[in-house]
Length: 285
Image 1 (cartoon, rainbow, N blue to C red):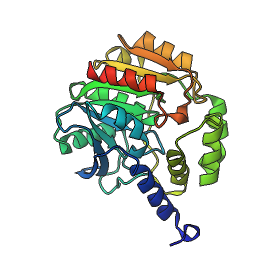
Image 2: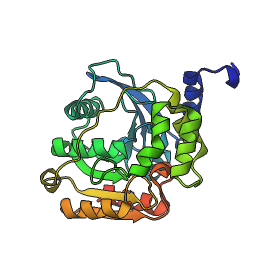
Image 3: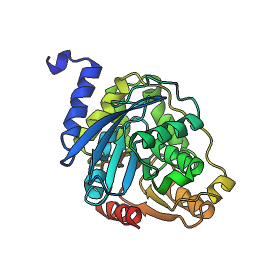
Image 4: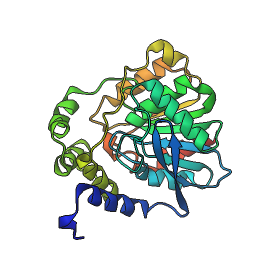
């Protein structure tokens, strides 16, 4: 089938395969049946290494973590997850995920399916909100928590970001999404395979993601797992300095670092080497 004749799903599948082909060797895949759907997971690293679950942002997939997987895979067992209801290869063929409690239950089922009592979690954007919510609800199953420019955790979206995103949200197309991502990243070079997959995801049907309020000060003060926050200094999503300041003021012992050259949508695919090193050290502590 020629590219011109491809359906959006065909084009997306081809782009997913192209990105997956660049993952470090060996990478394996699995499908975990859970009460809330079938979760597609990519695995890399020694099977006896400390487990780390990687959760993508909204519109992202497990594939976008390939540089992180390569950096962590020498010492850790990486499990990168396609979110049920989002793009990627997970399937919403179970009970609907309607609440934050459902998200927690779905991650419990993923850990159970992987045969894990606990794991560290690393989430980007919306995946960071999910990871933080899980750490608050299930601290005994969360060894360490790493948040990459998370949304909905410490600060609100900038109005200008939401206004710029509105046309893409009202009538999503690959071209509109690509233009929006180029605006947010300031034209910075991004992994072309990740960029293509993110743009094509806009033309696929997906479920509305579960959202909720930011955790309150009392919840954040009670956060038990050691936490690392990496904030994109060039993010147009929110005020990076404000995010870091509020995190330090509310989460005891949190480690924070602002990444000057990063924007929200250059992460996690183009996480700077220094940040990859900091993440590896943190997860190994």
